[in-house]
Length: 559
Image (cartoon, rainbow, N blue to C red):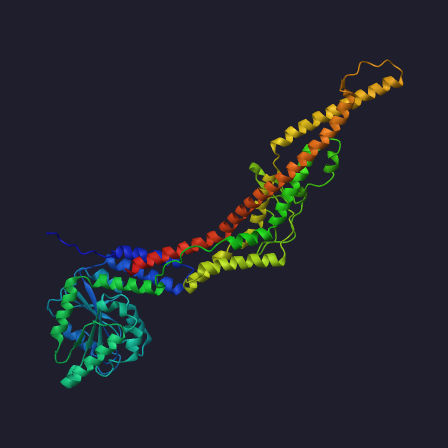
Protein backbone atom coordinates (compact mmCIF):
# COMPACT_ATOMS: atom_id res chain seq x y z
CA UNK A 1 0.00 0.00 0.00
CA UNK A 2 1.46 3.31 -1.03
CA UNK A 3 1.59 6.14 1.44
CA UNK A 4 0.37 9.41 0.01
CA UNK A 5 2.33 12.43 1.11
CA UNK A 6 0.70 15.82 1.13
CA UNK A 7 2.59 18.29 -1.00
CA UNK A 8 3.73 21.16 1.19
CA UNK A 9 3.87 24.74 0.02
CA UNK A 10 6.88 27.01 0.10
CA UNK A 11 8.58 27.37 3.46
CA UNK A 12 8.35 30.52 5.52
CA UNK A 13 12.04 31.19 4.86
CA UNK A 14 11.58 30.99 1.09
CA UNK A 15 8.55 33.28 1.22
CA UNK A 16 10.46 35.81 3.31
CA UNK A 17 13.34 35.71 0.84
CA UNK A 18 10.91 36.14 -2.05
CA UNK A 19 9.26 39.14 -0.34
CA UNK A 20 12.63 40.82 0.20
CA UNK A 21 13.60 40.16 -3.41
CA UNK A 22 10.32 41.63 -4.65
CA UNK A 23 10.79 44.71 -2.45
CA UNK A 24 14.31 45.21 -3.75
CA UNK A 25 13.17 44.90 -7.38
CA UNK A 26 10.29 47.32 -6.74
CA UNK A 27 12.64 50.00 -5.39
CA UNK A 28 12.11 53.19 -7.37
CA UNK A 29 9.14 51.67 -9.24
CA UNK A 30 6.48 51.54 -6.53
CA UNK A 31 5.65 54.06 -3.77
CA UNK A 32 8.29 54.16 -1.06
CA UNK A 33 5.80 53.50 1.74
CA UNK A 34 4.70 50.25 0.07
CA UNK A 35 8.28 49.05 -0.45
CA UNK A 36 9.38 50.05 3.06
CA UNK A 37 6.27 48.35 4.46
CA UNK A 38 7.25 45.08 2.78
CA UNK A 39 10.77 45.37 4.15
CA UNK A 40 9.41 46.10 7.62
CA UNK A 41 7.26 42.96 7.44
CA UNK A 42 10.25 40.88 6.40
CA UNK A 43 12.38 42.36 9.19
CA UNK A 44 9.63 41.82 11.76
CA UNK A 45 9.13 38.23 10.63
CA UNK A 46 12.84 37.59 10.78
CA UNK A 47 12.99 38.77 14.39
CA UNK A 48 9.89 36.85 15.52
CA UNK A 49 11.28 33.60 14.15
CA UNK A 50 14.32 33.89 16.40
CA UNK A 51 12.27 34.36 19.59
CA UNK A 52 10.37 31.78 21.62
CA UNK A 53 8.07 29.71 19.45
CA UNK A 54 6.82 27.82 22.51
CA UNK A 55 4.80 30.87 23.52
CA UNK A 56 1.78 32.29 21.75
CA UNK A 57 1.12 36.00 22.24
CA UNK A 58 -2.61 36.72 22.19
CA UNK A 59 -3.97 40.25 22.55
CA UNK A 60 -7.36 41.36 23.80
CA UNK A 61 -8.30 44.36 21.68
CA UNK A 62 -11.49 46.34 21.64
CA UNK A 63 -13.27 49.63 22.05
CA UNK A 64 -13.93 51.67 25.15
CA UNK A 65 -16.40 49.92 27.43
CA UNK A 66 -16.23 46.55 25.69
CA UNK A 67 -15.02 44.85 28.87
CA UNK A 68 -11.52 43.84 27.76
CA UNK A 69 -10.00 44.28 31.19
CA UNK A 70 -12.79 42.35 32.88
CA UNK A 71 -12.34 39.50 30.43
CA UNK A 72 -8.57 39.69 30.91
CA UNK A 73 -8.96 39.32 34.68
CA UNK A 74 -11.45 36.48 34.27
CA UNK A 75 -9.08 34.53 32.04
CA UNK A 76 -6.06 35.23 34.28
CA UNK A 77 -7.98 34.20 37.40
CA UNK A 78 -7.04 37.35 39.30
CA UNK A 79 -7.52 41.11 39.13
CA UNK A 80 -4.49 42.20 37.14
CA UNK A 81 -6.10 45.05 35.21
CA UNK A 82 -7.99 47.93 36.78
CA UNK A 83 -11.67 48.03 35.93
CA UNK A 84 -13.55 51.28 36.40
CA UNK A 85 -16.14 53.68 35.18
CA UNK A 86 -13.70 56.39 34.11
CA UNK A 87 -12.49 55.89 30.51
CA UNK A 88 -10.01 54.94 29.31
CA UNK A 89 -8.99 52.56 32.08
CA UNK A 90 -6.08 50.71 30.36
CA UNK A 91 -3.33 53.15 29.43
CA UNK A 92 -0.54 50.67 28.65
CA UNK A 93 -0.50 47.06 27.57
CA UNK A 94 0.23 44.46 30.21
CA UNK A 95 0.82 40.73 29.99
CA UNK A 96 -0.44 37.68 31.85
CA UNK A 97 1.80 34.64 31.46
CA UNK A 98 0.99 30.94 31.73
CA UNK A 99 4.37 29.18 32.20
CA UNK A 100 6.22 32.26 31.06
CA UNK A 101 9.75 30.93 31.45
CA UNK A 102 11.74 31.89 28.36
CA UNK A 103 9.22 34.52 27.24
CA UNK A 104 11.33 37.44 28.44
CA UNK A 105 13.09 38.26 25.13
CA UNK A 106 9.76 37.99 23.30
CA UNK A 107 8.13 40.48 25.69
CA UNK A 108 11.17 42.74 25.47
CA UNK A 109 10.76 42.82 21.69
CA UNK A 110 7.06 43.61 22.17
CA UNK A 111 8.06 46.31 24.68
CA UNK A 112 5.66 45.09 27.40
CA UNK A 113 7.16 46.07 30.77
CA UNK A 114 4.16 44.96 32.93
CA UNK A 115 4.21 41.19 33.26
CA UNK A 116 2.18 39.05 35.67
CA UNK A 117 1.96 35.33 36.19
CA UNK A 118 -1.56 34.07 35.65
CA UNK A 119 -3.34 32.58 38.67
CA UNK A 120 -5.48 30.30 36.53
CA UNK A 121 -3.95 26.96 35.54
CA UNK A 122 -6.55 25.97 33.02
CA UNK A 123 -4.27 24.21 30.55
CA UNK A 124 -3.09 27.37 28.78
CA UNK A 125 0.62 26.63 29.14
CA UNK A 126 2.62 28.86 26.82
CA UNK A 127 -0.01 31.59 26.51
CA UNK A 128 1.02 35.22 26.82
CA UNK A 129 -2.19 37.26 27.07
CA UNK A 130 -2.04 41.02 26.52
CA UNK A 131 -4.62 43.56 27.62
CA UNK A 132 -4.39 46.43 25.11
CA UNK A 133 -5.59 50.02 25.47
CA UNK A 134 -8.83 51.00 23.75
CA UNK A 135 -8.47 51.30 19.96
CA UNK A 136 -10.91 54.25 20.04
CA UNK A 137 -9.34 55.99 23.01
CA UNK A 138 -9.35 59.79 23.16
CA UNK A 139 -5.63 59.51 23.92
CA UNK A 140 -3.61 59.37 20.69
CA UNK A 141 -0.79 57.48 22.42
CA UNK A 142 -3.24 54.71 23.34
CA UNK A 143 -4.37 54.28 19.72
CA UNK A 144 -0.79 54.23 18.49
CA UNK A 145 0.06 51.53 21.05
CA UNK A 146 -2.83 49.41 19.80
CA UNK A 147 -1.76 49.87 16.18
CA UNK A 148 1.81 48.86 17.03
CA UNK A 149 0.90 45.69 18.89
CA UNK A 150 -1.81 44.62 16.44
CA UNK A 151 1.01 44.27 13.89
CA UNK A 152 3.18 42.18 16.21
CA UNK A 153 1.09 39.72 18.24
CA UNK A 154 0.50 36.13 17.17
CA UNK A 155 -3.24 35.93 17.91
CA UNK A 156 -5.86 38.70 17.90
CA UNK A 157 -8.93 38.43 20.13
CA UNK A 158 -11.35 41.24 19.32
CA UNK A 159 -13.69 42.00 22.20
CA UNK A 160 -16.95 43.71 21.25
CA UNK A 161 -20.09 44.55 23.20
CA UNK A 162 -23.73 44.44 22.10
CA UNK A 163 -23.91 48.20 21.70
CA UNK A 164 -20.77 48.84 19.60
CA UNK A 165 -20.07 45.58 17.72
CA UNK A 166 -21.03 47.29 14.43
CA UNK A 167 -18.81 50.32 15.04
CA UNK A 168 -17.35 51.49 11.70
CA UNK A 169 -14.05 52.41 13.38
CA UNK A 170 -13.48 48.77 14.26
CA UNK A 171 -14.55 47.28 10.94
CA UNK A 172 -13.01 49.86 8.61
CA UNK A 173 -9.77 50.50 10.45
CA UNK A 174 -8.94 46.99 11.61
CA UNK A 175 -11.14 44.01 10.70
CA UNK A 176 -11.52 44.65 6.97
CA UNK A 177 -7.81 45.46 6.58
CA UNK A 178 -6.90 42.24 8.42
CA UNK A 179 -8.97 39.94 6.24
CA UNK A 180 -5.87 37.92 5.34
CA UNK A 181 -5.30 37.29 9.07
CA UNK A 182 -8.55 35.45 9.76
CA UNK A 183 -6.54 32.36 10.67
CA UNK A 184 -5.17 34.15 13.76
CA UNK A 185 -8.29 36.00 14.81
CA UNK A 186 -11.13 35.43 17.27
CA UNK A 187 -14.14 37.66 17.94
CA UNK A 188 -15.76 37.68 21.36
CA UNK A 189 -19.16 39.24 21.97
CA UNK A 190 -18.83 40.22 25.64
CA UNK A 191 -21.47 41.37 28.13
CA UNK A 192 -24.13 39.04 26.75
CA UNK A 193 -25.54 38.82 30.28
CA UNK A 194 -27.15 42.20 29.59
CA UNK A 195 -29.25 40.76 26.74
CA UNK A 196 -32.17 38.36 26.59
CA UNK A 197 -31.25 34.98 25.10
CA UNK A 198 -33.12 35.69 21.87
CA UNK A 199 -31.32 39.01 21.49
CA UNK A 200 -27.96 37.25 21.92
CA UNK A 201 -28.69 35.03 18.94
CA UNK A 202 -29.72 38.01 16.84
CA UNK A 203 -26.54 39.89 17.78
CA UNK A 204 -24.40 36.86 16.95
CA UNK A 205 -26.07 36.43 13.56
CA UNK A 206 -25.69 40.12 12.75
CA UNK A 207 -22.07 40.10 13.89
CA UNK A 208 -21.44 37.03 11.74
CA UNK A 209 -22.93 38.85 8.76
CA UNK A 210 -20.71 41.89 9.31
CA UNK A 211 -17.60 39.73 9.63
CA UNK A 212 -18.45 37.88 6.42
CA UNK A 213 -18.78 41.22 4.65
CA UNK A 214 -15.35 42.15 6.01
CA UNK A 215 -13.85 39.03 4.40
CA UNK A 216 -13.56 37.22 7.72
CA UNK A 217 -15.74 34.21 6.99
CA UNK A 218 -14.85 31.33 9.27
CA UNK A 219 -13.48 33.46 12.10
CA UNK A 220 -14.79 32.00 15.37
CA UNK A 221 -17.38 34.15 17.18
CA UNK A 222 -18.12 33.44 20.84
CA UNK A 223 -20.69 34.86 23.21
CA UNK A 224 -19.10 35.54 26.58
CA UNK A 225 -19.86 37.26 29.85
CA UNK A 226 -16.82 38.16 31.88
CA UNK A 227 -19.11 39.02 34.84
CA UNK A 228 -21.06 35.76 35.00
CA UNK A 229 -18.48 33.47 33.42
CA UNK A 230 -20.79 32.41 30.60
CA UNK A 231 -18.84 31.22 27.56
CA UNK A 232 -15.45 31.46 29.30
CA UNK A 233 -14.94 27.70 29.17
CA UNK A 234 -15.41 27.67 25.41
CA UNK A 235 -13.04 30.63 25.05
CA UNK A 236 -10.40 28.95 27.19
CA UNK A 237 -10.74 25.73 25.19
CA UNK A 238 -10.33 27.61 21.91
CA UNK A 239 -7.30 29.50 23.21
CA UNK A 240 -5.86 26.25 24.54
CA UNK A 241 -6.18 24.63 21.10
CA UNK A 242 -4.41 27.54 19.44
CA UNK A 243 -1.63 27.58 22.03
CA UNK A 244 -1.14 23.81 21.90
CA UNK A 245 -0.68 23.89 18.12
CA UNK A 246 2.31 26.27 18.42
CA UNK A 247 1.48 27.50 14.91
CA UNK A 248 -0.16 30.86 15.50
CA UNK A 249 3.15 32.70 15.16
CA UNK A 250 3.93 31.16 11.77
CA UNK A 251 0.34 31.60 10.57
CA UNK A 252 0.53 35.26 11.56
CA UNK A 253 3.83 35.77 9.73
CA UNK A 254 2.45 34.00 6.66
CA UNK A 255 -0.54 36.34 6.66
CA UNK A 256 1.76 39.35 7.06
CA UNK A 257 3.83 38.25 4.08
CA UNK A 258 0.70 37.66 1.99
CA UNK A 259 -0.65 41.12 2.84
CA UNK A 260 2.67 42.85 2.11
CA UNK A 261 2.95 41.03 -1.21
CA UNK A 262 -0.61 42.05 -2.09
CA UNK A 263 0.26 45.68 -1.41
CA UNK A 264 3.26 45.43 -3.71
CA UNK A 265 0.92 44.45 -6.49
CA UNK A 266 -0.97 41.58 -8.00
CA UNK A 267 1.30 39.16 -9.90
CA UNK A 268 0.88 39.39 -13.66
CA UNK A 269 2.66 37.73 -16.49
CA UNK A 270 5.22 39.90 -18.24
CA UNK A 271 3.93 40.87 -21.69
CA UNK A 272 5.04 38.31 -24.29
CA UNK A 273 7.47 39.25 -27.01
CA UNK A 274 9.40 42.45 -27.52
CA UNK A 275 8.64 45.66 -29.36
CA UNK A 276 9.86 45.56 -32.92
CA UNK A 277 12.95 47.63 -33.63
CA UNK A 278 12.39 48.08 -37.34
CA UNK A 279 10.80 51.51 -37.06
CA UNK A 280 13.51 52.62 -34.62
CA UNK A 281 16.31 51.38 -36.87
CA UNK A 282 14.76 53.03 -39.93
CA UNK A 283 14.37 56.34 -38.11
CA UNK A 284 17.93 56.25 -36.79
CA UNK A 285 19.33 55.38 -40.21
CA UNK A 286 17.47 58.25 -41.83
CA UNK A 287 18.49 60.73 -39.14
CA UNK A 288 22.12 59.55 -39.31
CA UNK A 289 22.24 60.17 -43.06
CA UNK A 290 22.71 56.52 -44.00
CA UNK A 291 21.19 57.00 -47.51
CA UNK A 292 23.65 59.83 -48.16
CA UNK A 293 26.55 57.73 -46.87
CA UNK A 294 25.50 54.77 -49.03
CA UNK A 295 25.41 57.01 -52.09
CA UNK A 296 28.82 58.40 -51.17
CA UNK A 297 30.16 54.84 -50.87
CA UNK A 298 29.12 54.07 -54.45
CA UNK A 299 30.50 57.34 -55.80
CA UNK A 300 33.66 57.06 -53.74
CA UNK A 301 34.28 53.54 -55.02
CA UNK A 302 34.01 54.73 -58.62
CA UNK A 303 36.20 57.75 -57.87
CA UNK A 304 38.98 55.67 -56.35
CA UNK A 305 38.65 53.06 -59.09
CA UNK A 306 39.27 55.70 -61.76
CA UNK A 307 42.27 57.01 -59.85
CA UNK A 308 43.66 53.50 -59.46
CA UNK A 309 42.83 51.98 -62.88
CA UNK A 310 42.31 54.92 -65.22
CA UNK A 311 44.55 55.82 -68.17
CA UNK A 312 47.75 57.24 -66.62
CA UNK A 313 47.69 60.12 -69.09
CA UNK A 314 44.35 61.47 -67.77
CA UNK A 315 43.87 59.90 -64.35
CA UNK A 316 45.55 62.85 -62.60
CA UNK A 317 42.58 64.99 -63.58
CA UNK A 318 40.35 62.76 -61.42
CA UNK A 319 42.61 63.42 -58.42
CA UNK A 320 41.59 67.07 -58.57
CA UNK A 321 38.06 66.04 -57.56
CA UNK A 322 37.42 65.39 -53.83
CA UNK A 323 36.64 61.86 -52.67
CA UNK A 324 32.94 61.75 -51.64
CA UNK A 325 33.78 59.78 -48.49
CA UNK A 326 36.67 62.09 -47.65
CA UNK A 327 34.23 64.97 -47.94
CA UNK A 328 32.13 63.27 -45.23
CA UNK A 329 35.30 62.65 -43.16
CA UNK A 330 34.91 58.90 -43.39
CA UNK A 331 37.86 56.59 -43.77
CA UNK A 332 40.51 59.34 -43.71
CA UNK A 333 41.82 61.98 -41.37
CA UNK A 334 39.95 65.26 -41.67
CA UNK A 335 40.31 68.75 -40.27
CA UNK A 336 38.58 69.78 -37.11
CA UNK A 337 34.87 70.20 -37.22
CA UNK A 338 31.79 68.10 -37.34
CA UNK A 339 28.08 68.16 -37.66
CA UNK A 340 26.14 71.18 -36.68
CA UNK A 341 22.92 69.31 -35.87
CA UNK A 342 22.20 66.47 -33.49
CA UNK A 343 19.95 63.49 -33.15
CA UNK A 344 17.10 63.73 -30.63
CA UNK A 345 18.12 64.29 -27.04
CA UNK A 346 21.80 64.41 -27.93
CA UNK A 347 24.18 66.33 -25.73
CA UNK A 348 25.91 69.52 -26.79
CA UNK A 349 28.72 67.63 -28.51
CA UNK A 350 28.69 64.91 -31.17
CA UNK A 351 32.35 64.15 -30.51
CA UNK A 352 33.06 60.53 -29.73
CA UNK A 353 34.88 59.37 -26.67
CA UNK A 354 38.60 59.66 -27.07
CA UNK A 355 38.33 62.28 -29.83
CA UNK A 356 40.62 65.21 -29.82
CA UNK A 357 38.38 67.33 -32.02
CA UNK A 358 39.71 65.89 -35.28
CA UNK A 359 37.64 64.29 -38.00
CA UNK A 360 37.26 60.61 -38.53
CA UNK A 361 40.51 58.75 -38.39
CA UNK A 362 42.18 55.75 -36.87
CA UNK A 363 42.54 55.93 -33.15
CA UNK A 364 44.23 53.63 -30.63
CA UNK A 365 43.77 50.02 -31.62
CA UNK A 366 42.52 51.00 -35.06
CA UNK A 367 39.24 52.42 -33.76
CA UNK A 368 37.74 55.26 -35.71
CA UNK A 369 37.35 58.36 -33.58
CA UNK A 370 36.09 61.85 -34.18
CA UNK A 371 33.00 63.05 -36.00
CA UNK A 372 31.73 62.76 -39.53
CA UNK A 373 30.46 65.63 -41.65
CA UNK A 374 27.22 63.97 -42.66
CA UNK A 375 24.57 66.72 -42.78
CA UNK A 376 22.61 67.22 -39.58
CA UNK A 377 19.30 65.46 -39.02
CA UNK A 378 16.34 67.63 -39.93
CA UNK A 379 13.56 68.48 -37.50
CA UNK A 380 11.32 65.93 -39.20
CA UNK A 381 13.96 63.21 -38.88
CA UNK A 382 14.54 64.02 -35.22
CA UNK A 383 10.81 63.88 -34.60
CA UNK A 384 10.64 60.46 -36.24
CA UNK A 385 13.37 59.14 -33.95
CA UNK A 386 11.58 60.54 -30.91
CA UNK A 387 8.35 58.95 -32.07
CA UNK A 388 10.08 55.60 -32.67
CA UNK A 389 11.60 55.65 -29.16
CA UNK A 390 8.24 56.54 -27.64
CA UNK A 391 6.53 53.77 -29.62
CA UNK A 392 9.07 51.24 -28.33
CA UNK A 393 8.32 52.26 -24.75
CA UNK A 394 4.55 52.26 -25.27
CA UNK A 395 4.54 48.85 -26.94
CA UNK A 396 6.69 47.33 -24.21
CA UNK A 397 4.67 48.96 -21.41
CA UNK A 398 1.33 47.70 -22.70
CA UNK A 399 -0.67 45.81 -20.03
CA UNK A 400 1.86 46.60 -17.28
CA UNK A 401 0.74 48.18 -13.98
CA UNK A 402 1.07 51.97 -13.91
CA UNK A 403 4.39 52.37 -12.00
CA UNK A 404 6.09 49.62 -13.98
CA UNK A 405 4.74 50.96 -17.28
CA UNK A 406 6.20 54.37 -16.43
CA UNK A 407 9.54 52.74 -15.56
CA UNK A 408 9.60 50.93 -18.94
CA UNK A 409 8.84 54.15 -20.83
CA UNK A 410 11.60 55.91 -18.92
CA UNK A 411 13.99 53.05 -19.67
CA UNK A 412 13.35 53.52 -23.41
CA UNK A 413 14.51 57.14 -23.10
CA UNK A 414 17.17 56.62 -20.46
CA UNK A 415 20.16 56.49 -22.85
CA UNK A 416 18.80 58.52 -25.74
CA UNK A 417 21.45 61.20 -25.13
CA UNK A 418 24.08 58.70 -26.24
CA UNK A 419 22.37 57.90 -29.52
CA UNK A 420 23.87 60.74 -31.55
CA UNK A 421 27.53 59.96 -30.92
CA UNK A 422 27.02 56.20 -30.98
CA UNK A 423 25.21 56.21 -34.32
CA UNK A 424 27.73 58.64 -35.84
CA UNK A 425 30.57 56.41 -34.65
CA UNK A 426 29.16 53.20 -36.13
CA UNK A 427 28.35 54.98 -39.40
CA UNK A 428 31.95 56.12 -39.65
CA UNK A 429 33.40 52.76 -38.61
CA UNK A 430 31.17 50.68 -40.85
CA UNK A 431 31.50 53.02 -43.85
CA UNK A 432 35.27 53.15 -43.51
CA UNK A 433 35.39 49.49 -44.52
CA UNK A 434 34.00 50.51 -47.89
CA UNK A 435 37.29 52.26 -48.72
CA UNK A 436 39.20 48.98 -49.00
CA UNK A 437 40.78 48.60 -52.44
CA UNK A 438 39.89 45.48 -54.43
CA UNK A 439 42.84 43.38 -55.50
CA UNK A 440 42.02 43.67 -59.19
CA UNK A 441 42.72 47.39 -59.03
CA UNK A 442 46.40 46.67 -58.44
CA UNK A 443 46.56 44.20 -61.32
CA UNK A 444 44.83 46.62 -63.67
CA UNK A 445 47.07 49.43 -62.47
CA UNK A 446 50.16 47.37 -63.29
CA UNK A 447 48.65 46.52 -66.68
CA UNK A 448 47.91 50.16 -67.38
CA UNK A 449 51.47 51.15 -66.61
CA UNK A 450 52.77 48.38 -68.84
CA UNK A 451 50.54 49.59 -71.65
CA UNK A 452 51.62 53.15 -70.96
CA UNK A 453 55.25 52.04 -71.03
CA UNK A 454 54.64 50.36 -74.40
CA UNK A 455 52.99 53.52 -75.71
CA UNK A 456 55.86 55.63 -74.41
CA UNK A 457 58.38 53.23 -75.96
CA UNK A 458 56.58 53.53 -79.31
CA UNK A 459 56.56 57.31 -79.02
CA UNK A 460 60.27 57.43 -78.22
CA UNK A 461 61.05 55.00 -81.02
CA UNK A 462 59.13 57.13 -83.50
CA UNK A 463 60.76 60.24 -82.14
CA UNK A 464 64.18 58.73 -82.69
CA UNK A 465 63.26 57.81 -86.24
CA UNK A 466 62.01 61.34 -86.91
CA UNK A 467 65.23 62.75 -85.49
CA UNK A 468 67.42 60.51 -87.62
CA UNK A 469 65.40 61.42 -90.70
CA UNK A 470 65.69 65.09 -89.84
CA UNK A 471 69.46 64.72 -89.51
CA UNK A 472 69.59 62.74 -92.79
CA UNK A 473 71.03 59.76 -91.04
CA UNK A 474 70.64 56.30 -92.50
CA UNK A 475 67.49 54.51 -91.23
CA UNK A 476 67.97 51.29 -89.23
CA UNK A 477 65.97 48.23 -90.15
CA UNK A 478 62.33 48.77 -89.04
CA UNK A 479 60.27 45.71 -87.98
CA UNK A 480 56.62 45.77 -88.89
CA UNK A 481 53.36 44.09 -88.10
CA UNK A 482 52.10 43.47 -91.58
CA UNK A 483 52.63 46.84 -93.18
CA UNK A 484 52.48 48.84 -89.90
CA UNK A 485 55.81 49.61 -88.22
CA UNK A 486 56.25 48.41 -84.65
CA UNK A 487 56.75 51.91 -83.19
CA UNK A 488 53.36 52.92 -84.54
CA UNK A 489 51.77 49.74 -83.22
CA UNK A 490 53.23 50.41 -79.76
CA UNK A 491 52.14 54.06 -79.74
CA UNK A 492 48.65 53.73 -81.15
CA UNK A 493 47.97 50.32 -79.67
CA UNK A 494 49.13 51.43 -76.22
CA UNK A 495 46.91 54.49 -76.31
CA UNK A 496 43.87 52.54 -77.51
CA UNK A 497 44.52 49.71 -75.06
CA UNK A 498 44.88 52.14 -72.15
CA UNK A 499 41.63 53.89 -73.00
CA UNK A 500 39.85 50.57 -73.49
CA UNK A 501 41.15 49.18 -70.19
CA UNK A 502 40.09 52.39 -68.45
CA UNK A 503 36.57 52.14 -69.90
CA UNK A 504 36.21 48.49 -68.94
CA UNK A 505 37.55 49.25 -65.47
CA UNK A 506 35.05 52.07 -65.11
CA UNK A 507 32.20 49.71 -65.98
CA UNK A 508 33.50 47.19 -63.46
CA UNK A 509 33.88 49.96 -60.86
CA UNK A 510 30.30 51.07 -61.46
CA UNK A 511 28.99 47.56 -60.88
CA UNK A 512 31.33 47.08 -57.92
CA UNK A 513 30.23 50.40 -56.43
CA UNK A 514 26.60 49.30 -56.52
CA UNK A 515 27.44 45.99 -54.87
CA UNK A 516 29.56 47.73 -52.25
CA UNK A 517 26.81 50.28 -51.61
CA UNK A 518 24.27 47.49 -51.05
CA UNK A 519 26.61 45.67 -48.67
CA UNK A 520 27.36 48.88 -46.84
CA UNK A 521 23.66 49.69 -46.57
CA UNK A 522 23.00 46.29 -44.99
CA UNK A 523 25.98 46.64 -42.70
CA UNK A 524 24.93 50.14 -41.66
CA UNK A 525 21.38 49.05 -40.93
CA UNK A 526 22.72 46.18 -38.86
CA UNK A 527 25.18 48.41 -37.00
CA UNK A 528 22.64 51.16 -36.37
CA UNK A 529 20.15 48.50 -35.30
CA UNK A 530 22.67 47.26 -32.72
CA UNK A 531 23.03 50.81 -31.41
CA UNK A 532 19.25 51.09 -31.09
CA UNK A 533 19.19 47.70 -29.40
CA UNK A 534 21.96 48.61 -26.95
CA UNK A 535 20.73 52.08 -26.04
CA UNK A 536 16.94 51.76 -26.35
CA UNK A 537 15.77 48.14 -26.49
CA UNK A 538 18.28 46.70 -24.00
CA UNK A 539 17.20 49.05 -21.15
CA UNK A 540 13.58 48.19 -21.95
CA UNK A 541 14.33 44.47 -21.89
CA UNK A 542 16.20 44.90 -18.60
CA UNK A 543 13.18 46.63 -17.07
CA UNK A 544 10.85 43.93 -18.39
CA UNK A 545 13.16 41.25 -16.98
CA UNK A 546 13.15 43.09 -13.65
CA UNK A 547 9.34 43.10 -13.69
CA UNK A 548 9.26 39.41 -14.60
CA UNK A 549 11.57 38.58 -11.68
CA UNK A 550 9.44 40.84 -9.45
CA UNK A 551 6.23 39.01 -10.37
CA UNK A 552 7.95 35.66 -9.89
CA UNK A 553 9.19 36.67 -6.43
CA UNK A 554 5.77 38.11 -5.58
CA UNK A 555 4.08 34.88 -6.61
CA UNK A 556 6.45 32.89 -4.41
CA UNK A 557 5.83 35.24 -1.49
CA UNK A 558 2.05 34.90 -1.86
CA UNK A 559 2.03 31.14 -2.42
